[in-house]
Image 1 (tube, rainbow, N blue to C red):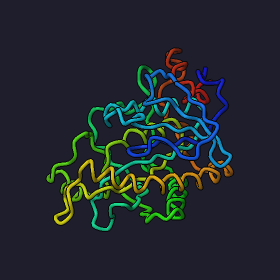
Image 2: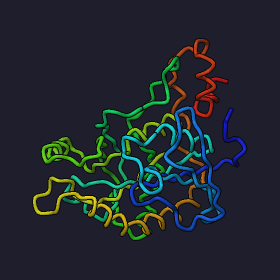
Image 3: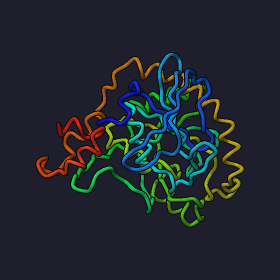
Length: 294
């Protein structure tokens, strides 16, 4: 049973990261305090209209930036959006550059993800229901392409590919870590995309990141090291660009069928014999696995 079945389904979700705690131009707004089997989301979900399309907006760190990256309840956030009917997520994130060619103020739409976190809940599954999700391509290629095009049309300097490493935080890297991540082939670094992307895949949602470069981490010899002040300054400069890109992209997403494999990511992933899955787990995960277990 969907606990939010009284809310008209909302197909598009926006997760705002550092600096993007609200969405300008959102009209006819309703706020929903969504409870999930995994606890409470970061904040109330604001459902409103952009360019004639209903969308759901969630501030990843809570309004006012109350939650550290490790404190974010990623499972609750993704489950809450799923229970409202969201099928496609545009995630906005801050990141540091590990490459000379990716400059502060520019945007990267990553196509690969390296998880270097240590303390987070990574999956909806367990407790009698085992699923092994494919994650060779962790972001939706179709949605990522559209996000990049929208950001470019809004005036952004966009890199359409990149390897994104997620660290635990909340501290910034040491120089030893930063140089190591560069030697591993990573392009940008942040603190929130994992496990968010993997949970969205388990929930069969399209997920793409608009990552705003705010700094050069700490590896660059001639540029200033990352500071909160520098991060906030760049994010403030880029907020209007992110919102303009999203406003242009939302109608496109509403008009066209997804046409990708994200909506069947679980079709071959569930390993547990259906007859031995506990009923309480089936009920708990019904918004995610219901179509495979009915």
